[in-house]
Image (cartoon, rainbow, N blue to C red; front, side, top):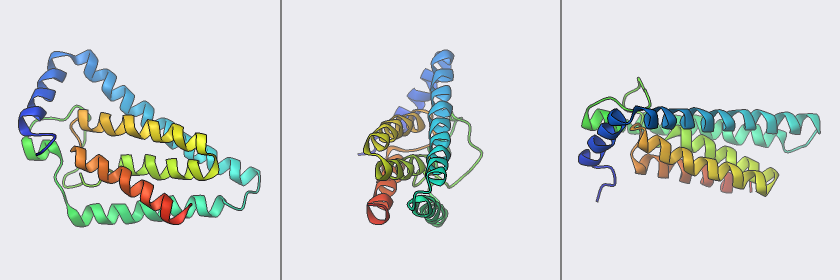
Length: 165
């Protein structure tokens, strides 16, 4: 059973059109959560650099290599986004096609979360919570199916488990 059927997608689209303030809030949450993680990661790396922590190279290479591999996987799969499948305009504007699976945004948050967990478990936990919220926002925003964000999260966690912990 598909979690995001055409009927549900159209209902979401209609909701955002009827409630533009709610739609703006979702878009802002998407930007804030994404920005928070993309600021946290360089801050972690800067801290490791300043403290001359030997984990710095690992914390750069694992997320970086994993990101490239997920990008190649996603390109090879070529899965369509909800708006490509069902038509319409997503709440979160995208101009890419065939780049839905896995979600690279969610993957990035979770692999960075695993890096945070590797450095300090509480930091990783905070990043995981952000990742869950971002995954929900990406589906609500119409740019990913639930399977896309689940796969992104799973691959981010797997990369961290295999190569960081």
